[in-house]
Length: 339
Image (cartoon, rainbow, N blue to C red):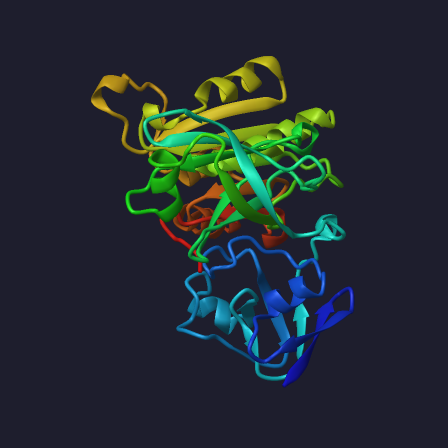
C-alpha cells in the first residue's frame, strides 16, 4: 500500500510505501528533507504532523520525547505512515541535485592525531567526481553489509580527497580495522554524501559551533568553507572534550582564532587530567555556552557530536530564545554500527 505525503509550506508531495520510513521514501525520490543520523538518535528530521498518523517499528525513538509526541511531532527517519500525511518539515534545498552514490575509494594515507583519533585520507578513482557540501558525511559499506558513518572533515574547495577523523572504540567494527589490520592503500566502499548539516549561507546571523570529541570533524569543514567564501559572520567555536589530550586538533582551532578576528575559540574540558594544569573552562560544553549568552535568539547554532550533547544543547538553548529552525546538528553514536 502507498500513502501520499504533502510537505508544507512548499506543498511538495511524494509517495511512501507502508514498509518504509518517510525519510527513506523522500531520499529515494530526491526530496531534500532535513536529516542527520537516520538512526532515531538526533532529532534532526523532526517534523510537525498536521494531518494523518504514523507508527514506529520499535518503541518510540530515542530522539522523540513524549512531549514531542504531544506537540504533534514525528521523527521522519523512523516514522512509517498509516495514512496519507500532511507535514510541516524543513526542506534542505542546498542538497537538491547532489547525487548520493556508492563508489570505491582507496586509503591514500592515515595519521594518528592523538591517542584515540586517526586522520584517514581517501581518494576516489580518477574518473569519479565526488560532489558534497561541507559538514556532510559518508557511510563505509563493510564486507558483512554493516555500515559505519563518518563526517567529512574537509571542505569542497579541498575536495580532491575525503578527510575523516576516526575515533578508536573498542569493539567498533571499522575502528578496530582502521587502528589495527588496515593495510596501506586499502580499498574500501563508501556511499555519500549524506546528511543536511551544511552552512546556511543566506543569512548574516552570528554562528556558534558546538563540537564534542570528533564532532570537531564536520565543524572543521564548515569553518574552512566559511573562510573560503570570505564570510565575516562572527564565529564562536566551543569544543568539548574530556582532557587536553582529547583536543586532537587544538593547534588548528587556536590558529583560526589568532589569524581571524571574527573567530573565537573556547575549549571546554569535562575531566582534565592532573598533569594538564588546565586553567580554562570546565564542565559540559553546552553549559559553557549557556553561561556566556543570555539570549540566543539571534544566533545560528551548529552542533556536532554525541546525541546526548546535541539533545542537551537543544533543550537548553531553547530556554534562551533559540528557535528550532536555527539549530543544526550532526549527531552520531561512536560505537554504533549500522546494518
